Length: 131
View 1 (cartoon, rainbow, N blue to C red):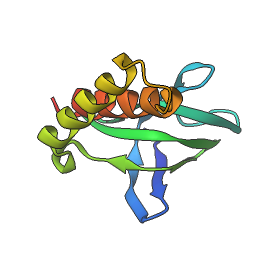
View 2: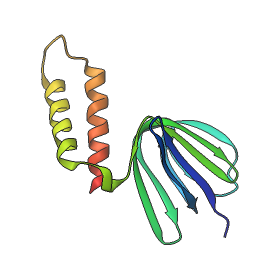
View 3: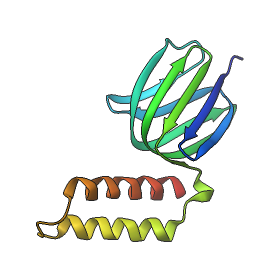
View 4: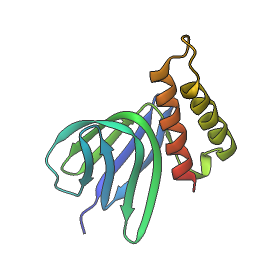
């Protein structure tokens, strides 16, 4: 069976490099599923999980934005950050979620609501992947 060479890279360096049967992720325009032989494309990624299928196993990563580049035999994910479930500090993610929710609920003018919304999305994504 054909596979895809998959590379997940962040500014801190490579996070994952392996071969997979399928890549599923959420682009800004919707959910994408990539199989070997897919047409070339580039798409911006949302804060979401990336699911990588290899035989009967599945790997999930928490990705915080970035870009997906697809070629017929290779997928490259250039992410602002990416974490394996084992690397996620659940307590820290829960605290970040609470802080973001408090900022969004406050009526203070000095709160950057867009930044708080992004922080909340990142925390929720990390918690979903960790569980």
